Length: 70
Image (cartoon, rainbow, N blue to C red; front, side, top):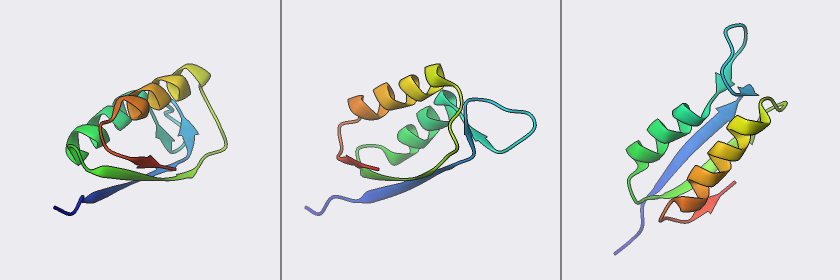
């Protein structure tokens, strides 16, 4: 059984923004749901943003049953 991998790209500001590209905790929820139990590779290039959304994203990735590489 070979484990499949899902890639998630996070660019822009962490949190919700109306003015620029952003990635929020609800965005990671959808991405993890789509990944199922696959391993996840996160491609991250963000200038920062909302610390609370960042912590939420971290906690959701930490609970993911597959391997997560950032």
